[in-house]
Amino acid sequence: MKILFIASESHPYVTTGGLAGVVGSLPKALARAGHSVRICIPLYGRINRAQFGIGFRQTLCVHMGTAEVWCGLYETDHAPGVETWFIDHSAMFGRPGIYDHNGHSFHDNNERFAFLSKAALQACKDLDWIPDVIHAHDWQAAPAAAFRKTWDAWGSPLSQTATVLTLHNLAYQGQGDAGVMRWMGLGPEHFTADKFEDHKGVNLLKGGIAFADAITTVSPTYAKEIQGPIGGQGLHQVLARRSSDLFGILNGIDEQHYDPSTDAAIARNFSSNDLSSRLECRRSLQKELGLHQDGSRCIVSIVSRIAPGKGFDLIEPVMERAIREMHIQFVMVGSGDRHYEWWVSDLQRRYPGLVGSWIGYREDLAHKVYAGSDLYLMPSQFEPCGLSQMYAMRYGTLPLVRKTGGLADTVWNYIERDGGGDGFVFNDYTPDSLHGTLGWALGTFFDRPAHFDQMRRRVMDRDFSWDASVPLYEMVYRHALRKIRAR
Image 1 (cartoon, rainbow, N blue to C red):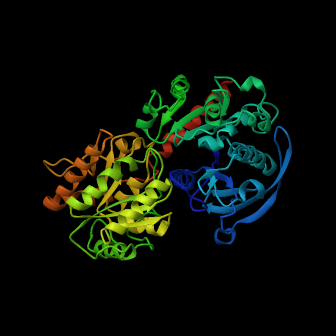
Image 2 (spheres, one colour; image 1 turned 30 degrees about the horizontal axis):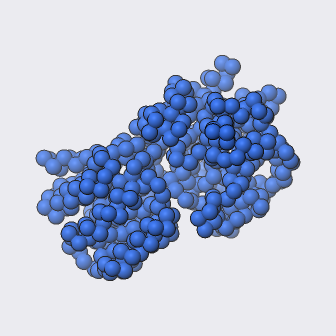
Image 3 (cartoon, rainbow, N blue to C red; image 1 turned 135 degrees about the vertical axis):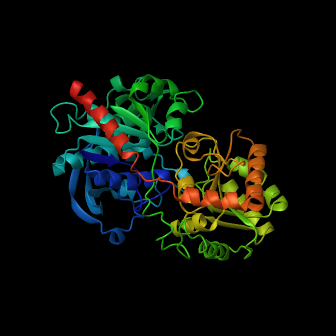
């Protein structure tokens, strides 16, 4: 099959979260299975063209509802069987940020990403590369499904192309002013409660759900949760009506990129057969973040966007108490909410040598955290899938998670009786639950080290590749194509 991925970001070109990891790695696995894949993302100003060998291909004329917009199409080889296309429009994508700047979202985000979706379809037609399936990701690419069923419904080279929409996180839906409908060239018949209309405004994700031939989420548990009033974040009824076209497929990771036996970013390579070099990775992490070179403490870490739902409202009241009462060092890498950025910086000032932080994101540092820590925190209120718990396990750092979404599908709770399981899991979203589970995990680290070591080796050998998920995506693509052909 020919498959076009449309997304707002992709690893390694631009990354703000797990979306980029999926878009950068799943196409490689599909290509290994014999498919031809293209990825289409914006050419943001921060993308280093020389570093990635990005070159100009041609100019595109994109017909929006109110204007003809000219843009550049650039490209590079992503992997065997995969190319990445970049849509170049400096006014829309050449800005300092991706979605926002200095904490303020761009007011025209809906217009920008609707344009991305339309330009991606135009690129297919102009290059005469007609996909069997358009695979759109999250609200930014959701308009592609609507464009395919309206502008390209009849007499278009794309009129037999199926659309699949993946929901990575329903917390973000592309809500905004209804005026974007005119920009997209979609009439009032589509501004209805069953399509784009949402409390008199527009909801791009809701419209994409209405038009897509099939819908996927990034874990089986999340697919169930979003059909209920809590997990659905206002879209549960819409999704429940599409339940026969809704599939939950667990994300994988790029196991070549996250491989402690070959990773050049960490101080010393190691494997599950020989963990002795992990001690040097631990010391390297402590040195880089100004922690005491103390081999006796349990290093507890988190690498995350500081955003609602990630559990920082639990971590804040628990962590200082844990630093005082428990024999730990705490590491945090991330950025977002200014309150929590200030909180961890203040915690580091008051507990020098016991707290280390980096405000922002550095991929090399993230790898060092995974390789040098003992416990990895993900006390999420909701987590569609989560990738970093899998990254951490790949490096032998045991996850401590709340049982929700993809965390419930990837982390099996420790069994104290025989050392079974591969992490520590709690249910209730409360500080007491996190504190109690952290104490249990530390008790295992100090009092049952054989169990802790046994779990380390077990999680490092788990298969987190895309190999199990590719046949499921192929099934979804065939499902979507059958719907097109039936019509």
